[in-house]
Image (cartoon, rainbow, N blue to C red; front, side, top):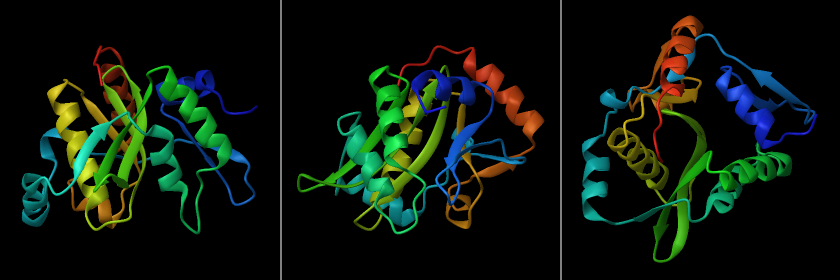
Length: 189
């Protein structure tokens, strides 16, 4: 079955997400443990804080969703196929997927995107072509989610890179409880 907004929403609501394997066949994943970024524990390094305060980058929201996805896909080994870009762009048009864009001198130099349901945000990927641009995107995403009352920021898997921001792993059962509670919220991105 091809990816579409209804299928994607159903998967995220049920603690799953899609990813193609090396053959291009889409599989559905539900890792245990699951990685989340507690919004009240986001760690900002001094150098990143300095960059955020300097306004070195301009940040926008939902102005270049497909371009952010394309930026995330622009690497040698990517799972973000044209089918994913199309399906998530359709989800974006329905107001259920969002992007944070980072600009420098009018050029898109970084960003992140993900799915938004209730008070949950499921971060999918991020990219940068200038140092710290993806970190700025993540920091601005966390600020926005906090300000708008979101309860859950899911990032799928814990990596050393994400650990520096305060990402933790929780068991699937705890993730499902947090997800169910977050889905009851009515947060606006």
